Image (cartoon, rainbow over all chains, first blue to last red; front, side, top):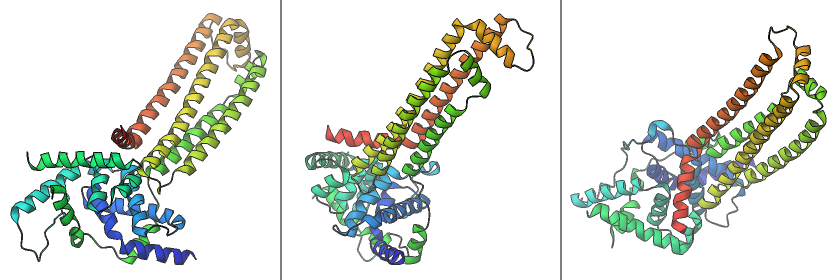
Length: 164
Length: 215
C-alpha cells in the first residue's frame, strides 16, 4: 500500500515538476536554494499526499502546497539573501529568430517581477500560469475583487518599471 | 496586449530551460526530513512548555522546608494546583492549534494558523513569567515583613555559618532575589527577540502584505 502510494506520488510529481521548478526559480536566487526549496516542497507535498482525494487536479493541489511552502514554511538560508546570481534564467528559444529589444524588455520585466514582495509574486505567478481570478483568490485566501484590484496595481507598477 | 501578457507568452515557453529531475531523484527527496518553519515552531514551543514546567518543579528542598516553616505551604499548594490546571489548558490549546496547521489551506489561513499557534505559546510564557514574578514579589514581601523569622530559619539550614550580621545577610538575600528575577526576565526577552526575529519576521511581513490587499 505504502509502496503504491509512493509510486503514484513520485510519478505524478515527476510529470508536474515544472510547476515546482518555476516557483523555485521565482522565489530563490541561486541553484543551491532552488534545490533546497524544491526539496522542502516535495516533502510538504508528500506529507499532504495521503489526504489528497483527487477531487481536484493534482496540479491544482500542487500550486497551493508549493506556494504555501515557498512563502510561509520555507526558511531562506542566510547565504542566499540579497544575491542575484541566478544563471539559468533565459527566455531564449533556440529555434526562434530573436528580437533583441524584446528580449531585453523581458529580462527587465522578469527581474521586476522577482523584486516584488512574496505575496505579489504569488499573484503574478498564478496569473502567468493562466489561472483565473477565482483560483488566484482561493489560493491566496483573499476575495476575488481584491485579487483583481491588486493585480491591476501590480501591472501598473510593472508598466512604470518598463516605461520610465 | 500589456507587458505582462507578453511575459505570460514567454513564461510558458521557459519550460525547456527548467531542470528535469528523474524518478529516483524525487524518490530520494521524499525520504528526507522537513526543515520547515512549522517544525521549528513546534520544537521551540515544546521546549518552552517543558522548560517552564520543569522550572516550576525545580525548587530546592531546603527552600520548601523554609516556606513550610514560614507558613506558606498552604498558599503554595493552592497556587500549584491552579497553575497546573492552567498549564494543561494551555497545552491542549497549543495542540489543537498545531494540528489545525495544514499546508493545503489557503496562504492566508495557513499564516493565520501558524500565528495563532505561536500566540498560544507566547501567552503561555507571558503567563508563566508573570506568575513567577508575582510569586517572587509576593514571597519576598512576606519575607520582608517576617525577616527575623526568615533569618533564624535560613541560619539553621546553612551548614557553615556565614560571618554576617542579620542585617547584612538580609540585605544580600534580597539583592540576590531581585537580580535573579531580572536575569530570568532578561533571558526571556532575549529569547523572544531571537525567535521572532529569525523565524517569524518574514511570515509577519507577508501576512501584513496580504492584509493590505484586503483593506
